[in-house]
Length: 279
Image 1 (spheres, rainbow, N blue to C red):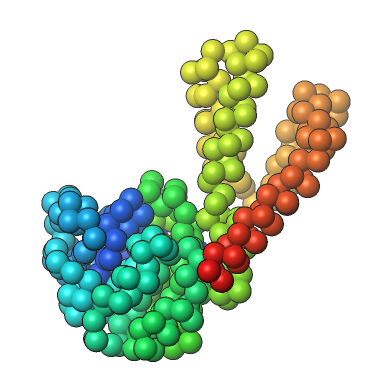
Image 2: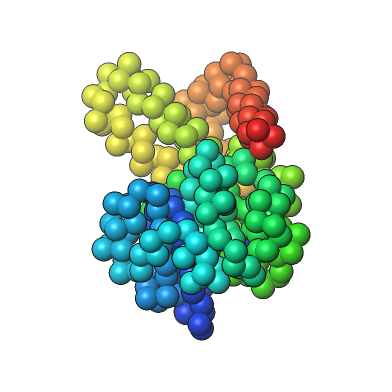
């Protein structure tokens, strides 16, 4: 069972937080955590390989600039690892000799065992798969615990990730499936909207009108699913009159294998995640 952690507010006493990687996702997570009042800005230490990114984060959010990765680990008891997978190995090598920290990684494809081994088992590890709607506080994240991570670590992870949306717990063998469904999922919605806009233009609408109608339709449908106790299937039935316009469109979807296309696409995303993890 997942939860929307944005309802949980209040500072965690004596907590110190580190952020390694001040890109869009790192700053989005940090911003949500600070808005939720989980930690004070003065108890947050950040570093980014690009000095200007760290400086911008410090200026925007009032946190402290650590100067290097080892200092983040020295000063913070919980550290969010928000760097890209291709730079992850070099980042791990720069963590220094400190131990006993909680490392929460959002890097796609980097396995828990890889992180534990690379850090000599000195830290507790949690692996998270977030998605980009976290940038607007509407993220969907799933996390998995490493071998030495505790239930207290799980609760803290839910508190932190919940500050930017929904969060749920899975076993690590399901993280690649999570990546396929929610990690990559926003792109599927964007692609659907692109197609709806092109279709609207083909039918005579101007592009701006088609775009606005499509975006608000998707946003409204999502809010309706969140608010309604009915399943998506039932909500679909509720707006489908026999032999009506919606019925005609859905029949066309079915005839063209829409369900099969979606299933195959998500399987391809999952399989690619598995490949990246092996690499």
